[in-house]
Image (cartoon, rainbow, N blue to C red; front, top):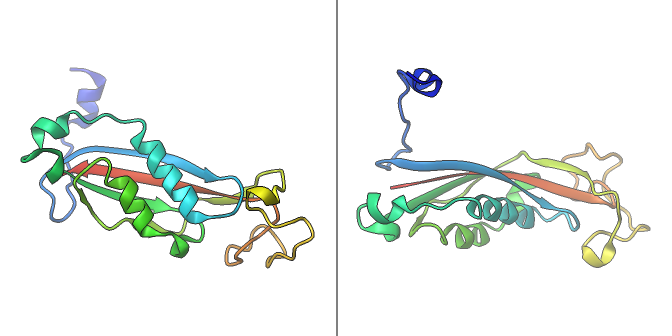
Length: 158
């Protein structure tokens, strides 16, 4: 018996409520280096995940094919309440016919890009930002060179 087989002995698959089977789960990171836009970071995370998977099984294992496949995403990103869910649904719809409402939670990371680029969306160096420190998660902008990192985890099944 292989080590992988031994490790999975006694394991049980968990299926989301209303689903029959999960075929794949994967995760990825997306970054908005300038502009501090949580939608941009979230969409990049979802695209990064989708760009790294091929699911030929959707054609044969899902009753009715891709149009009946479902995709579900959970994304952790700073300023998660500001994410445009419709943009996420549009990207998620490229992999499956049915898109569950994306779940957005606080998470990801706010950090410094190391360069202030106003033409790319950063506030100008002389602009007032709302936070005294980079650790003020409630501030709309914490520093002039703020970047946002989002983490997306995606499930596909039916």
